[in-house]
Image 1: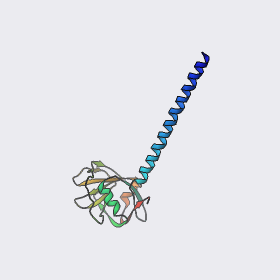
Image 2: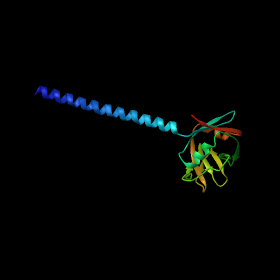
Image 3: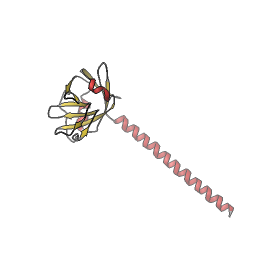
Image 4: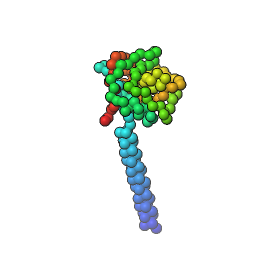
Length: 157
């Protein structure tokens, strides 16, 4: 009887080990997939001599169209009391690109009516022809201070 108990206990431990091993394998695979996705993501850097902002672009047509135009050296302009704008070399293709519903500091959008890219440092709201491009992942506090010439380039290529 004692041997049967020991045998059952060993089987139980082997089952626990197998489950943990499968869990570890699953976690490793998930980490690899996340790393691959991060490497494939479109990141851009907007900078001048004083500041830099890193944006993570959404996976949509307008973002891809902007990404393909980089690098850019452009002039940034103030607009209103919550945003900075610049004009890409060519209009962005908004096919299958969602409209901006609402955003805030760090939101990057495209206003198709005027063909300008908008960097928000304050609140943003839904508006016809305003499409979401991405979000700042670093440096959003510097957007309000941007002025003059900007250099925009891809990150991680």
